[in-house]
Image 1 (cartoon, rainbow, N blue to C red):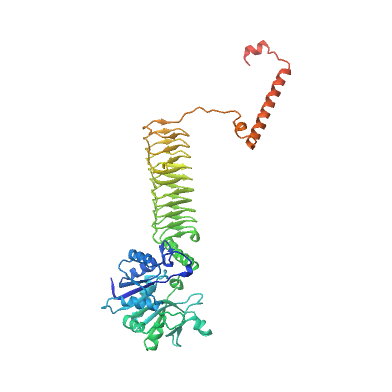
Image 2 (tube, rainbow, N blue to C red):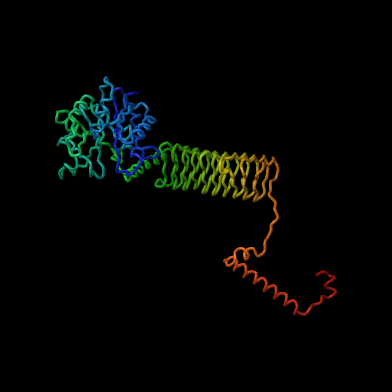
Length: 504
């Protein structure tokens, strides 16, 4: 149910220079989704009456993502006046004039903060008489953060930034997490008092807390249970830390749901992936995108699946696959490369060192090893011989091949598309198939072998091959001469009539 008394402001205007990246910080991927998409998903889960997203750097790219992830969000462009206080000021101005509820302010670079934690935070704020509430945390290292200073009775007193803190204040472990909840009237009144009269020339949102306290309003601080929930991302090291934290929780969640994951430390699973109970994930495996794996399937080791579908009891090992469908009971790998458009039927096989692309391989059919299958359909129960190439590209356009059911192709075949091979047909080893093969026929290329004596000496004189051949020929000639001399000089032996006649 929509919370008619809640508005959410997502701060997404920062440049993120510490990422040192051409890609905007908030668009860097985390568990398969952009950083800011996690925050927008949290905002959506809270079902607020209004969501405002403030953008500036790479405005169009961020706005496009917001429109896709959270279409109901209002986009506000921050102007030339810098600072989070100014961003919130402009967002508040975009709220409907008849709204008079609470305003939750969250950061687009704090992706692990979930809706359940924020719901508890909102409840705590509403249960108090506070004009503003600050979300706090107790990290292992509080260096660099603003400290929450409390009274002797434990009540919130103020926020002191590290640069302004004395030794006693720096020893405080409770820090400001940068998430706030205000009553709209109180927030609007204090935003009007913000100035840029500071070293950075910015309007600071944290100054609103001090202004509220000086006005005699109550402010509270509510700590989160786990500090990792409010970890922000400012550089790639922090992105990796957040990714590891999130992945550990994703993996554990699937383990508790009945998935066997042998080595959580080397297994990475994106948020949108779906795994059925009794799936087994072996070490070194990445399940990316919206991949779906059904009951009994074994994935890995050393396998990456991107947006794939894997059926029941299929086995996929040491494989890289993207946008592929692997049906029940099928086998893939090791060292297979499945490109988009691959569809392997039930109980089929794509074996070692096989690459496929836009290929439908029917139920029970096999491409066991060392082959490339592109732009092709293979029927049911067929076997593609080792080292087969589907020559689908003529330098200008791609062409299609159709291989029937129960076809047996020889090793080292080349199918020059467009080509059709009928049901039950055979092809001989080493055959280059350029013409259609009727059902039940055998296609072969027959040519007599021709040996050209002394070709190497004539065409590659002075090479190692020439020297080796010369030595071999010299040895053979010497052996032949010796055998001839020995036969001439040896006394002849006359077989006895009885031996000759007996045929012994």
